[in-house]
Picture (cartoon, rainbow over the protein chains, first blue to last red):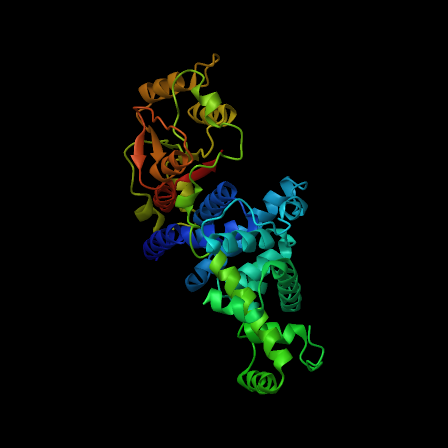
Length: 181
Length: 219
């Protein structure tokens, strides 16, 4: 039985390593810094490997890893309270044209990421899990250990804030849609 | 914003609609209303656009390979380790086992005894993922303390490593290629000690060892 379980865990360890890019993407969306996202990802995968025997339902591997990522990030935020988001908000451009940007698409990506970074961490987590990982509200609630009602209200506030942050530079809604598709 | 939108569709419900959280009947209700209410339709479009923008912003140019060219947020992690002119591998694993020659932990663990760990030789993996001098010191201290041969003097790291390897044939140093690649992408030169063995992924290596009953210590 133990032997069978060892084989299962080896396979799971492989899947944990294979989840690196997905975990990194969410970590980056949360913290907005690639080097830090790298560290958070590494820490998450390490903790995942060490506590692999605690994973009850193998199908829920990514959700379980995201919950670990959440704890890693909370630990990180606690360790440096000063860096809670205001700085990033202050960096938001006043919509100046900027120095001759070649790709307008790249500019959009940059603006959206800055807007996401300007959200309070709790809203940032909820909105990125729902939109990037396409998780249901119930799954997001489970990963972050918060009530579903909180997930819903945070999503509302996050989208309202993003609209406010992105709107001034955006043309009317039809144009937005055309460009994204 | 258009104020003609029906008040009964709360912002939360519209977001839930966009996120596919509503039951078919509720979806139908909102779709029917949006067909007659341009303001409502526009609100839904905006929410949808924000969702798409966000997804788009993180779908490309966002993999670990992109971490190149940016300085590490921590002050130069190599400075301390390089002091003696010898670089130490980042992501070093120091593997030890108390009694050499026994690698049948998985099998013996399947025995019916309640506490298989107690009957196995003590084995330990020490995981270093930073090259700061104090981390290396701590790891080496651990190794030496574990081997119960703590030395009074502190030789440079490379010297201590070489010495450990010379005195104990059950210690190995393993460098993680993923970690090396990460540092090289960040523009840092990585020199691996000649005694270190490379492994594709330290994580996978740790997983293998854990399954064989090793104790894992992260420094």
